[in-house]
Image (cartoon, rainbow, N blue to C red; front, side, top):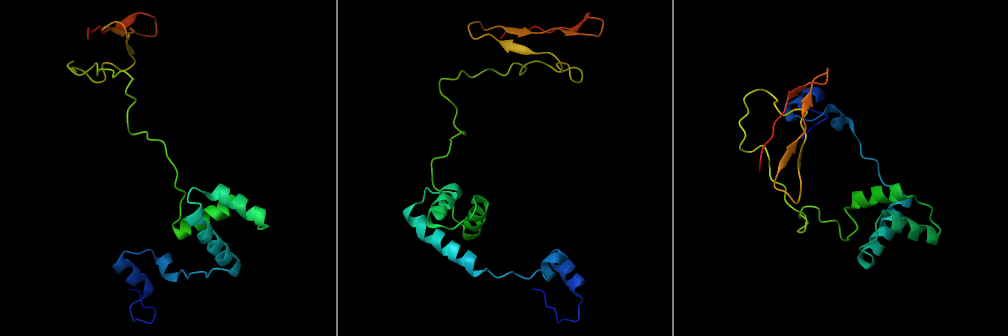
Length: 150
């Protein structure tokens, strides 16, 4: 990788490796004893409480007398690769009772740029009809109107 004692300058080494120059100068900051003790305590709790997120863990730490905030606990959890296991919303599946609306402009030929810009369409659930609002110019006269039966 990057060798600081090499004859090739550091900037050129970084350019050849396609790495930002700031990464070559970065030196890792060692963990403090306080943070390592906190990480150890979180690691002890996680197998017994896998559903506990940063909020719950910070409250558990406060009960023990340690005053660490939720964001600090969250940062350490990210660093350790720990996350809470709980049911998340399944938004990828559609609701079966919801009606599927047809795509109304599928078989219409587009002959000019943006012909339906400003028109609004609505399908009434009890009727298989398409209602389009009329596009009006600044004087209030209808400039274009499109009506299609579905």
